[in-house]
Length: 263
Image (cartoon, rainbow, N blue to C red; front, side, top):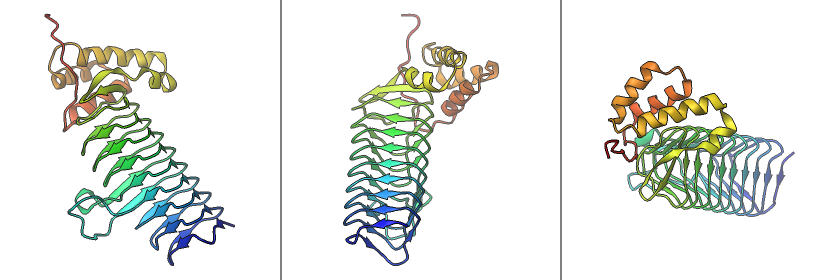
């Protein structure tokens, strides 16, 4: 049994799972699918072709699946897919994809999107990410697993952020951030490893491997991709290999400050 408030407007064709709670004045489109054990609070709006998994909580006044904020959009068949056990807080806005970006915006599992977060078209967010209040992701941004974005931080379109990375609050990010790293500033640059996050998930030996790799990559004074290729030949750490692969595949560049080791 689901608990649906009598003032909610659910269009014919919408699929509602079991044990779903839908609050007052919620609107749900005909193409929406709402998974089991999901709660949608008062005045939230679920638009378009939106699939929401199980165990999610969508808070009041969130707008999920409204058309992309892209002037090229002209009514194409686009989609938003949200996984399981996410928390989407008040006044968050999530857009579906566009034809030019693959037509899908996708959010994984166990993410927390705090109040007033904006998720633009064709964004991909994996699992266990936290986006603090007012974080803004432009179109085509990609986040790995366990990423943390501080409040009031805009992310430029097409930026990729690797696993376990953290972007400090009130930063402005326009380039790719490798996995395991911490970035801060306007424009944001690397400030070191995200050691707090790493200590929660990796053992000491792997953290030490990443510390050594970080120094060699970003503090040696050598060309970054050249140094990455050399380090790949010697490392046995899967996390260091992940870091190097991200760097060598980056298309927007890595915002680090090259140090002059000769003074």
